[in-house]
Amino acid sequence: MPDVFINYRTGDGNDIAALIDNELANRFGKDRAFRASRSISPGSAYPEALLASVRRSALVLAVIGADWLNFQSRLGDPEDWVRKEIVEAFDCGVPVVPVLAGRGTERLRKERLPQELARLAELQSVRLDTQNAEADLKRLGDLVAEMVPELYDLEHAEVPAAGPGSVSNSAGAVSGTAVQSRDFTGDVGNTVIKGSSGPVHSGQGNIYQNSRHISGDRHYSGDGMTNIEGDQRGDIHHRFGDSGRPEDNER
Image (cartoon, rainbow, N blue to C red; front, side):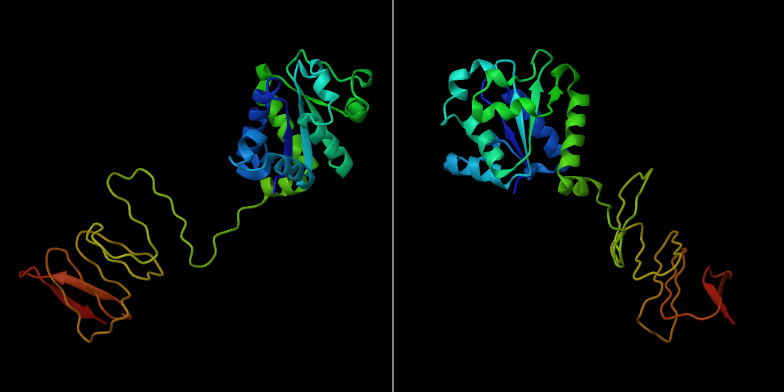
């Protein structure tokens, strides 16, 4: 369901409509705005899609280009789609904001509008100048967020904190391969770590720590490779004799 309906006339404001559509998509999400040339799928019946989208929207942005009033014959035609969309919004109580495209576009005057559209001249408008597009688009986005509370809440929703079982780490200044997992096994610097719940120091060689497999023996090998199995209690000291193998002095 679109929150914002972008009303525009092809040949007079369609470029501004595309800018608005892109800004709202970047800020609130892809499908929060309706623009006919993008939002209606090929083969779809556009009359139903247009009017239904106006009714479901929370806000209509009516893009008024420099030549908008020069289409007097179309504005007076009940079958003109720019007119029909605006009248539908009025009839359904959907707020309409005129968006004046460019510096040279003047505010609308009632005497130059058909009776069904005369209300447009009474509505506060905003200006969108392509030479000041970044600031004007941001200002328009702020207005949309203010007028459509759902979009304001969406934009200001807090990211939930990481819960139990989630993993959130960062790695900087890494040369080579960095692998992260809650439990991981593999050839990562000759280290295998499972379910660690405290500091784990790994140097050269293989270290198995806090394994659930209980063995009555402790196995040692030389060259700095240490395997520890079982749930150890107390302190373990290793020293190397002439043979190069560690001797166990456990208290």
